[in-house]
Image (cartoon, rainbow, N blue to C red; front, side, top):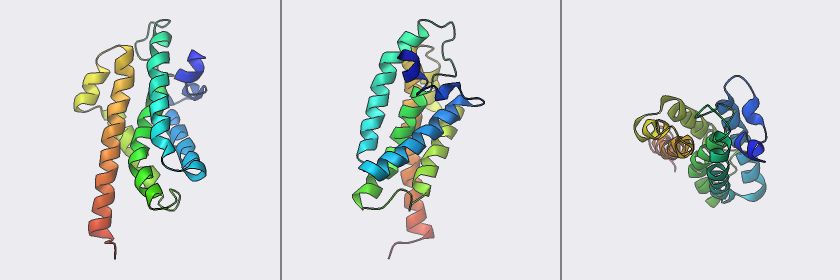
Length: 165
């Protein structure tokens, strides 16, 4: 059970770049959930993935010499769903399909991967903790920053490039 959770149903074993595979799977599942059930479910998924990760990651690391094994991707999934929530909730509240607003799921994915790889400021500080909480925290911060960045870019796009009537 721990391995299934931490690898997000074994997606973390895909190579190369398991974090990108985990993020992409989270986006695909997030889009599907949005279309079938509504955008309000994405923050709940993010919370569930966060809680599952906070429970499973310490247990997985206790059996590993590696402090942040690449196959652990539940942290990317939680962070990606946080990022996606920032655009999903406004789209859902306006009755707009996330597929109709396709940058609404592409931009959070790209920004999340950028922040997760680059690790600026508190993201890098969380990553350097070298413990299970740090494994989760860096991606939660990356998701928050990616979500905020997505909102800012959407605002810029709609206010400057394509003003609303």
